[in-house]
Length: 196
Image (tube, rainbow, N blue to C red; front, side):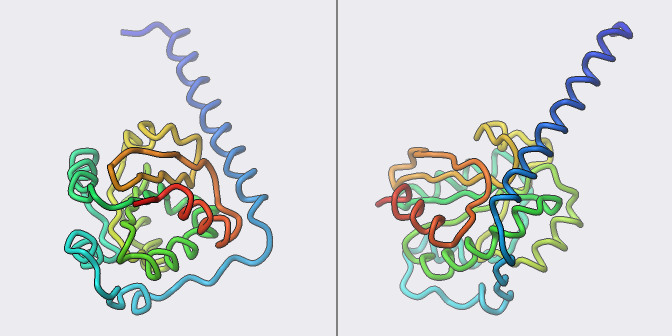
């Protein structure tokens, strides 16, 4: 059993961590100025993506899916996508900057889904809240639940959103911390980091 001072110290550390995440989100939100981009509809993100390799076509068949299985399921999916660049976006329903940024990912995944794999990670979210968010911002790719933040910790996410870029060999190239303020900035990172 832990002593009272130890429990108080642990509570203080947890409170500080929450404050830091809130400050980081506020800073990210401040950079995303202007009106939020319009999200695509489920019908728009579900359109066929054209001549895609089997692994990417199979991924597109799982539009807006919220998958259980955590780290194991996510790692298996990453392995199945070797040979293709992969973009992984970490999001949550409680993350306002995620709402702003998601239309950028929607459009890129619809336009580039035959060449680049896209995946989502739903971080420390309540399942029903995540489903409501996904109904409002449907994703042209599946997301994996990360209820304890294990995957977010692996990427060193210091708040949400965060976006990881893998090359076709399966090597993690970079993790972008925070929101992309414009579609052009996201597409620039996609060109730079998600390479064949």
